[in-house]
Figure 1 (cartoon, rainbow, N blue to C red):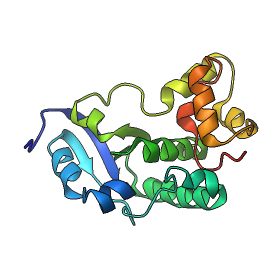
Figure 2: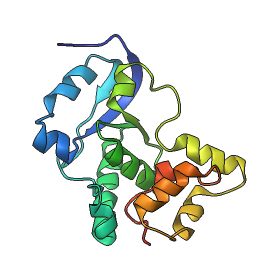
Figure 3: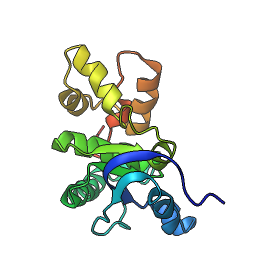
Length: 178
Protein backbone atom coordinates (compact mmCIF):
# COMPACT_ATOMS: atom_id res chain seq x y z
CA UNK A 1 0.00 0.00 0.00
CA UNK A 2 0.85 3.67 -0.12
CA UNK A 3 3.08 4.75 2.77
CA UNK A 4 3.58 8.40 1.89
CA UNK A 5 3.00 11.11 -0.69
CA UNK A 6 5.09 13.82 -2.29
CA UNK A 7 2.56 16.63 -1.68
CA UNK A 8 3.53 19.77 0.19
CA UNK A 9 1.02 21.87 2.15
CA UNK A 10 2.60 24.28 4.63
CA UNK A 11 0.62 24.93 7.80
CA UNK A 12 -1.05 23.23 10.73
CA UNK A 13 -4.00 20.88 10.50
CA UNK A 14 -6.27 18.93 12.78
CA UNK A 15 -8.12 15.77 11.76
CA UNK A 16 -11.75 14.84 12.38
CA UNK A 17 -12.48 11.13 12.76
CA UNK A 18 -15.89 10.44 11.23
CA UNK A 19 -18.18 8.06 13.07
CA UNK A 20 -18.47 5.62 10.17
CA UNK A 21 -14.77 5.69 9.34
CA UNK A 22 -13.72 5.23 12.95
CA UNK A 23 -16.34 2.80 14.21
CA UNK A 24 -17.32 0.83 11.12
CA UNK A 25 -14.10 0.85 9.09
CA UNK A 26 -11.53 1.22 11.91
CA UNK A 27 -9.87 4.16 10.11
CA UNK A 28 -7.80 6.05 12.68
CA UNK A 29 -4.04 5.88 12.16
CA UNK A 30 -4.07 5.46 8.35
CA UNK A 31 -4.95 9.05 7.37
CA UNK A 32 -2.63 10.44 10.03
CA UNK A 33 0.22 8.26 8.79
CA UNK A 34 -0.26 9.53 5.22
CA UNK A 35 -0.75 13.14 6.32
CA UNK A 36 2.50 12.95 8.30
CA UNK A 37 4.29 12.49 4.95
CA UNK A 38 2.92 15.77 3.53
CA UNK A 39 5.76 18.29 3.39
CA UNK A 40 5.35 21.31 5.65
CA UNK A 41 2.16 20.02 7.32
CA UNK A 42 2.05 19.77 11.11
CA UNK A 43 -0.78 17.74 12.64
CA UNK A 44 -2.35 18.88 15.91
CA UNK A 45 -4.84 16.56 17.59
CA UNK A 46 -8.07 18.18 18.77
CA UNK A 47 -9.71 17.34 22.08
CA UNK A 48 -12.22 14.53 21.79
CA UNK A 49 -11.44 14.00 18.10
CA UNK A 50 -13.46 10.78 18.16
CA UNK A 51 -16.68 12.61 19.13
CA UNK A 52 -19.36 12.95 16.45
CA UNK A 53 -19.72 16.27 14.60
CA UNK A 54 -23.52 16.09 14.75
CA UNK A 55 -24.23 15.50 11.06
CA UNK A 56 -25.08 11.79 11.01
CA UNK A 57 -27.09 11.77 7.78
CA UNK A 58 -30.74 12.23 8.74
CA UNK A 59 -29.86 12.73 12.43
CA UNK A 60 -29.32 16.44 11.79
CA UNK A 61 -32.75 16.68 10.17
CA UNK A 62 -34.61 14.69 12.82
CA UNK A 63 -32.86 16.31 15.79
CA UNK A 64 -31.61 19.72 14.61
CA UNK A 65 -31.21 21.28 18.07
CA UNK A 66 -29.12 18.39 19.36
CA UNK A 67 -27.14 18.25 16.13
CA UNK A 68 -26.41 21.98 16.27
CA UNK A 69 -25.19 21.73 19.87
CA UNK A 70 -22.85 18.91 18.89
CA UNK A 71 -21.36 20.74 15.89
CA UNK A 72 -20.99 23.89 17.99
CA UNK A 73 -18.84 21.94 20.46
CA UNK A 74 -16.86 20.35 17.63
CA UNK A 75 -16.20 23.74 16.00
CA UNK A 76 -14.98 25.12 19.32
CA UNK A 77 -12.64 22.12 19.70
CA UNK A 78 -11.27 22.72 16.20
CA UNK A 79 -10.65 26.39 16.98
CA UNK A 80 -8.89 25.57 20.27
CA UNK A 81 -6.24 23.62 18.34
CA UNK A 82 -5.09 26.78 16.59
CA UNK A 83 -4.93 24.77 13.35
CA UNK A 84 -5.31 26.56 10.03
CA UNK A 85 -6.87 23.52 8.36
CA UNK A 86 -9.50 20.98 9.33
CA UNK A 87 -9.17 17.69 7.47
CA UNK A 88 -11.34 14.60 7.35
CA UNK A 89 -12.56 11.79 5.15
CA UNK A 90 -16.34 12.28 5.26
CA UNK A 91 -17.84 15.07 3.16
CA UNK A 92 -21.05 15.19 5.21
CA UNK A 93 -19.01 15.88 8.35
CA UNK A 94 -16.79 18.36 6.54
CA UNK A 95 -19.71 20.33 5.07
CA UNK A 96 -21.38 20.42 8.47
CA UNK A 97 -18.27 21.67 10.26
CA UNK A 98 -17.27 24.08 7.46
CA UNK A 99 -20.69 25.72 7.72
CA UNK A 100 -20.50 26.09 11.48
CA UNK A 101 -16.90 27.37 11.39
CA UNK A 102 -17.87 29.89 8.69
CA UNK A 103 -20.77 31.24 10.75
CA UNK A 104 -18.54 31.49 13.82
CA UNK A 105 -16.14 33.61 11.77
CA UNK A 106 -13.32 31.11 12.25
CA UNK A 107 -10.42 31.39 9.78
CA UNK A 108 -10.09 27.58 9.61
CA UNK A 109 -10.19 26.20 6.05
CA UNK A 110 -11.76 22.75 5.56
CA UNK A 111 -10.48 20.16 3.07
CA UNK A 112 -11.01 16.47 2.37
CA UNK A 113 -7.88 14.49 3.23
CA UNK A 114 -7.62 13.30 -0.38
CA UNK A 115 -7.24 16.93 -1.54
CA UNK A 116 -4.27 17.44 0.77
CA UNK A 117 -2.65 14.11 -0.13
CA UNK A 118 -2.99 14.96 -3.83
CA UNK A 119 -1.47 18.41 -3.29
CA UNK A 120 -4.73 20.12 -4.22
CA UNK A 121 -5.30 22.13 -1.04
CA UNK A 122 -4.35 25.40 -2.72
CA UNK A 123 -7.78 25.99 -4.23
CA UNK A 124 -10.99 27.00 -2.49
CA UNK A 125 -11.77 25.10 0.69
CA UNK A 126 -15.16 23.48 1.28
CA UNK A 127 -17.86 26.17 1.17
CA UNK A 128 -15.55 29.02 0.11
CA UNK A 129 -16.56 29.01 -3.56
CA UNK A 130 -20.26 29.08 -2.74
CA UNK A 131 -19.77 31.95 -0.29
CA UNK A 132 -17.68 33.89 -2.82
CA UNK A 133 -20.42 33.52 -5.47
CA UNK A 134 -22.99 34.87 -3.03
CA UNK A 135 -20.78 37.81 -2.02
CA UNK A 136 -20.19 38.60 -5.72
CA UNK A 137 -23.99 38.95 -6.05
CA UNK A 138 -24.14 41.19 -3.00
CA UNK A 139 -25.64 38.49 -0.76
CA UNK A 140 -24.54 37.43 2.69
CA UNK A 141 -24.28 33.64 2.99
CA UNK A 142 -24.94 33.71 6.72
CA UNK A 143 -28.19 35.68 6.58
CA UNK A 144 -29.37 33.88 3.46
CA UNK A 145 -28.87 30.52 5.15
CA UNK A 146 -30.58 31.54 8.37
CA UNK A 147 -33.55 33.14 6.63
CA UNK A 148 -34.23 30.32 4.16
CA UNK A 149 -36.00 27.77 6.33
CA UNK A 150 -38.48 26.51 3.76
CA UNK A 151 -37.63 22.82 3.79
CA UNK A 152 -35.63 20.00 5.24
CA UNK A 153 -31.87 19.94 4.74
CA UNK A 154 -32.04 17.16 2.15
CA UNK A 155 -34.74 19.02 0.22
CA UNK A 156 -32.73 22.22 0.30
CA UNK A 157 -29.64 20.38 -0.92
CA UNK A 158 -31.59 18.94 -3.85
CA UNK A 159 -33.14 22.31 -4.65
CA UNK A 160 -29.77 24.03 -4.36
CA UNK A 161 -28.19 21.64 -6.84
CA UNK A 162 -30.97 22.23 -9.34
CA UNK A 163 -31.00 26.04 -9.16
CA UNK A 164 -28.26 28.51 -10.02
CA UNK A 165 -29.70 31.01 -7.57
CA UNK A 166 -29.12 28.71 -4.57
CA UNK A 167 -25.35 28.07 -4.51
CA UNK A 168 -25.26 27.83 -0.71
CA UNK A 169 -25.53 24.05 -0.50
CA UNK A 170 -22.01 23.59 0.87
CA UNK A 171 -22.55 25.67 3.98
CA UNK A 172 -25.50 23.94 5.59
CA UNK A 173 -25.23 22.60 9.07
CA UNK A 174 -27.58 21.27 11.66
CA UNK A 175 -29.11 24.58 12.67
CA UNK A 176 -31.06 24.59 9.41
CA UNK A 177 -34.61 24.06 10.66
CA UNK A 178 -37.65 23.63 8.42
